[in-house]
Image (cartoon, rainbow, N blue to C red; front, side, top):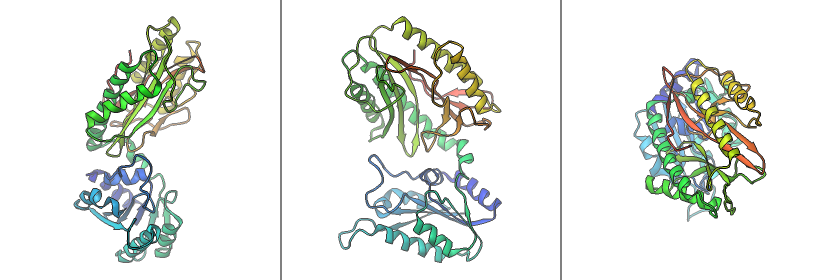
Length: 375
């Protein structure tokens, strides 16, 4: 599980002569191990930090609170994987998970074969106590924040299989949302229909993002569903992300309660054409900012306001990751990147249209990964 990602990381660290490393960013941990805590309402109440990964000489140790022992066991069976746990909630003593984590980590440091040499650390997500323990073990500590991000942009076959499954679930959610849209139905009713259909298909609890908003909201770009009922001919943006096995999908469509007005029809056609135009620009070698600029110009040339958000983004262990399709980004697209494109047109408090598809960059162009009805 995720062995290819760990091999890439091992090669990167060896290239920089880093013998040991602590990965603390949740996205890094998921990408390296495939372990994703079953989070719906935030981190485990008794864990001292997010799960961590300690690297030494080609071996990776996953550090988790005892509540996740069973869930993490499969990683311990990997040829280059180990698992250690620290106590969280106990009946016999007060909750001191921070102290237990520090003790476990210090023991791990003492057991390492490398006494000297460089240690890499993702400092932005490592607590002060862990950073201090690392510095006590070596005088040569290197910040490695962001080092894995370029590797994460190009998906492995294993990652693509999970993403395809999640995008298929998103399609199911959209079909249910589209059917639920009707005069009198509330934003939360449409959202609940989508979420229920997804969980029934998945056979388990599934966290769901992102937006379900009526066009008459003053900020009608995005937001959580509320107790607002659809009025005749009103549009609603439904932007769904399924988060399962640590990976995110994404997608968006705009639906209508009844027949579309001529203005709605016009904007929907423009955004549809903008999306398809953007997809035609995706290919290996294309530059992110040039794609962004061309799609924005496409919208601007119609005389309508240009959307105030990104044109697109990558997706994987995070719902929004590199490469970002934004005006400043000079990153070059590569084969096996997964790119979300989501142009839109917004008139605050009146009318809003956004459409979004996921595209896999292939050797010759693209493959569409989302298949929800956006017509």
